[in-house]
Image 1 (cartoon, rainbow, N blue to C red):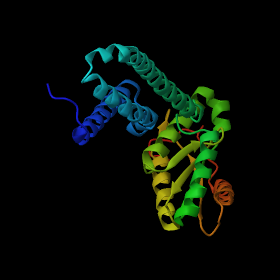
Image 2 (image 1 turned 45 degrees about the vertical axis):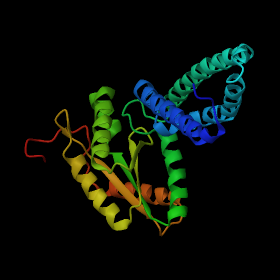
Image 3 (image 1 turned 180 degrees about the horizontal axis):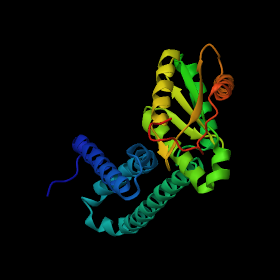
Length: 275
């Protein structure tokens, strides 16, 4: 049989890289299918593992050179090989546990940021989205817009038709908003009957188009024979340099719109002609 040779070092290096590639692919497939963890997260966990393997490779290669001329030297290497096998099994189990815990953490973290009734972001998720969007604005110099939506007469609807009806109204409004905005937009329930929409990379003209689309979508909603009614306000950064200032401006515009609206609320059914 052919003896190990330093001339074959490129082949040994290629074999090690092939091992890394196989480990990476198999781990990504297993963890993505089993836990739904992104390939980037799996690769991040495997980086220190590959570092350890790379550091151990010269040790194994040196052992091979020693054993080749003296086969009995294998007996002295066997305990080390057994120890490395134990470490490898333990490492594999720990990686699986770490990935599973990471998946569980992110799942719980996302759940903590979701509104239980509608599934959109809650106040916590909204505040974090605002902070991230503010930083993105500073980094990219791109505008961002905000839309505030408030159900008209929800308290009266709850009093006259019950809280279950009111909950149905809230869910209907949430669906109308979520199905109308873009994928990158953020919809959140920021209060009992109030929703907010964050539109990154969206100027004033685009925000006005979004408001019209949302108004049309809300007007098409019917809940128990009642036409859904809501007041809307919007604002854009710039001219304001802070999204929270823009949010206050949008909120003020929404209340102005609510005061100007005819006195009809979601507790009142409309007739067949929609009046």
